[in-house]
Image 1 (cartoon, helix red, strand yellow):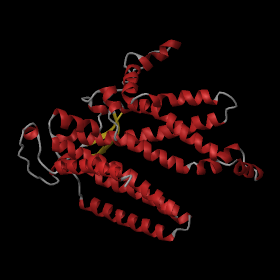
Image 2 (cartoon, rainbow, N blue to C red; image 1 turned 120 degrees about the vertical axis):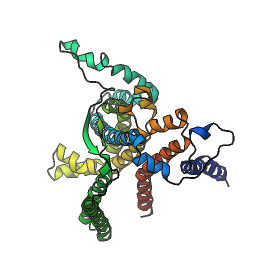
Image 3 (spheres, one colour; image 1 turned 45 degrees about the horizontal axis):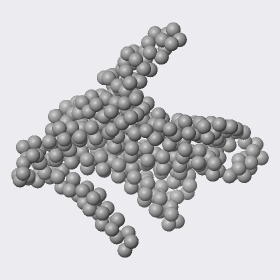
Image 4 (spheres, one colour; image 1 turned 60 degrees about the horizontal axis):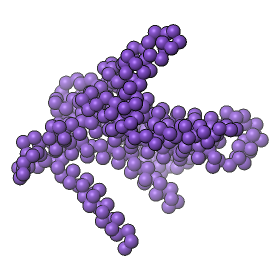
Length: 359
């Protein structure tokens, strides 16, 4: 009875609104009916989703997905690396630990809007970071941190299904290898079967010439994303540092001493004792940082604005479609797509956590 009000509020204001958003995404609620008192709305099924992924007028959304994918990889990877390095250095300090820990954690106290505004000043093409080399007599930098339109890692969207199958196939292969090393035969067979199915799909798709679009459509990594990545890593690397530092402090000195007795050096102890024991923290950090990256909105809005395509992400386009273009059904469809992407990251983690807890 005590938690019943919380459950009721959660059901209404979270899952109820998710259900309403899904319902709207299956309609044609658009510009004509957006502001009507009694709008005439018809159900169109998955038409909005189909248009987002294949419609000629939605090329920006598909580039947004590419931006979000590359931003997530760079942001999560660099945040983990910087946080681990900082935690390792602070763990070795004899004095000043409290000072440096506070300094590195300070950016987390700022809102993303403040961070975006400050880094927008720092990344001006003719100021900020670009003029730092002039302080030592070198020419000023010329990199367009937020306005560059250069792309790398370009791929054809019409073959996106093949790329997804390849990524999942590689992930399954690594997971199967891990199960094989641990002697978990049933899990190994499951991953092997899934990998074989994916390989068959790839072969059939390539042989049959199956594509998502009838024409080539190139997308890639916009180099302007580096500016946003720098600001995001600056703000969140302190958080990963705190996680790793707490993890390092929980590792028993007896394990390290046993490794020293066996002849292991400092690097070997760090490689074969510390890092494996930090794996649960790394997984948790990846999930937390990953869902932040997938939903990123306010940082990019403050740094580059909503109309700057090179740094746009799906959340920005959802805002524009819904509140500026009054395309409520399309905006709801983008919201559901983001929900699915976040769920693909969080649900396996929660399921594994519950399974581990039961064991």
